Image (cartoon, rainbow, N blue to C red; front, side, top):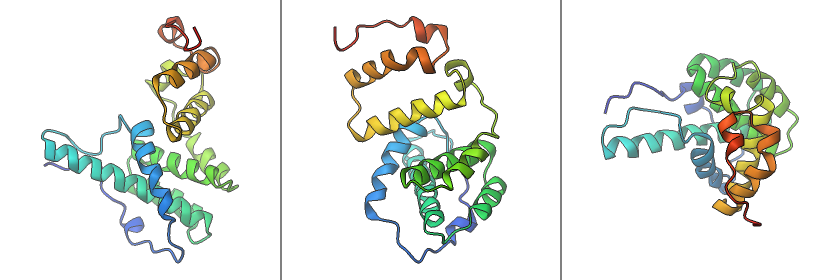
Length: 187
């Protein structure tokens, strides 16, 4: 397999925390992979083995972001170092998603440093396809928040339909999205 995309940050690889990441935080890896990183390529997929390798890479990337956020939360890792090193070690897309996961994890822990990471995220250009679907960056954050929250509750078609009809007018801007009128689960 030709590895042309994501390469693990050596700084994070060598990072050791005094406090271990709680075991239960591993449950968020599946959610981030399924909801947030489903369309992000970590390597080229040609064979089944490539796919397995890419899933491992994605999981490692997610784990590193969760691990780093935990280190920031416990004051074992400097947020300034993380922002500087990740921008240097990862391409624009990977650094954005790394910071996004760190932001979500700090927010989940009610850590005030989440606002520092959010400020960094706001510096990224709001690009397509998101620019064509969401009204603005905050609308995308809100949609992702809903999806991530519902993913923990077993997001199903009925729940998604309810969310769609409740928020499509306030968060979404694409005409084809707003024209979609399948029956609400309450009908």
